[in-house]
Length: 331
Figure 1: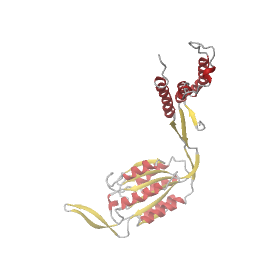
Figure 2 (figure 1 turned 135 degrees about the vertical axis):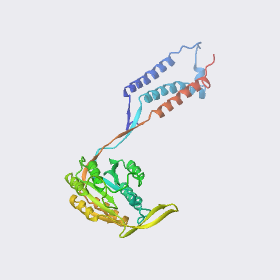
Figure 3 (figure 1 turned 90 degrees about the vertical axis):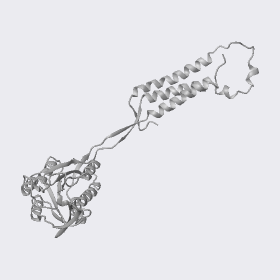
Figure 4 (figure 1 turned 180 degrees about the vertical axis):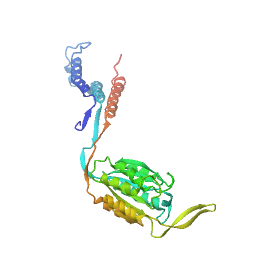
């Protein structure tokens, strides 16, 4: 019964030793009762059948003793624990760096580039189990939406809240890389990866993309760059006094800079014209050298005393009810 159970106050269980003592005291008391009147012989009653009330005359006392035992066990607070063991598993640290500039609203991806990128990123996160992942967003500036974590529910919620216009418009690729480096530089993992997704040309920020890539290389960070956009022109929604109007705009991605960033850090450049290209990136990441990451274990306590209290109360109430009704003594 108590194989997987521990007690918060085990010393209280010593009171269970009183149970046999109380039972013995009751037995002695019953046998030492002096009759109010005597007969010369009781043989005449030996053949008389016992009623149910006579057979169960000691039931209230045993109910009282049993309820005491249940209350003692409840007071000791029995608990069960669900616990996980410390294990070592394969994992890498990943910084997802996502462009949220106004041009990401172009609709060569459906429903648009930004939402398509968020959807594929979310699917990627759902497929992870032990990798620590962080999220950096940028346009004219850059900031960390979520630091490195294995709490994927929090990460996915923060990803879903991203929208264009959160930051001043522009494309600060160098600042974005520097921010990603800050997320990864103190990592103990042997594999540190940054996935930079953008659809434009660096035109903002204080840090040059090539300089930022060289800093990343010093910290052993591999950068995979993804240029998002179709070849040629893409439909872009413009707000006019008459509603949304679409205009074809040229797709301008600085592929030379993207390739240099990846080459400096030992990564790879992808031109993503559809979601399939993004999947190729994640397949490449799966082939990276992995390092062992310790997963911290924890214990969750479940209180079990409620059932013991309930049974104890039931037995006590049954004792009181029977003593005052069925087994009530005449005055």
